[in-house]
Amino acid sequence: MGKISKQTDKHIKYYKCEVCLKNIPIEYYFTVGDSITCTDCNAEYVLQSKNPLELTRQAVDYSKLDFDEPY
Ligand SMILES: [Zn+2]
Image (tube, rainbow, N blue to C red; front, side):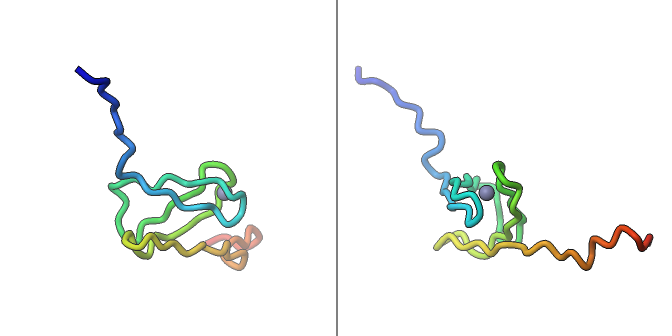
């Protein structure tokens, strides 16, 4: 009997964060349109395509973060 190696992360792809260059695991259950946040620097990405893996970075829209103006 050979050694059984559990490659549970076999289908996980990684996307290199543009900000901190850490590899962000793209889990299989992510679908196109999902937002993915870098676990290291909290940069936000939106999954554009899974094959090939394509993400676009969500630029933080500071105009929407106007704390002086309540909704
Ligand atoms: Zn990052």
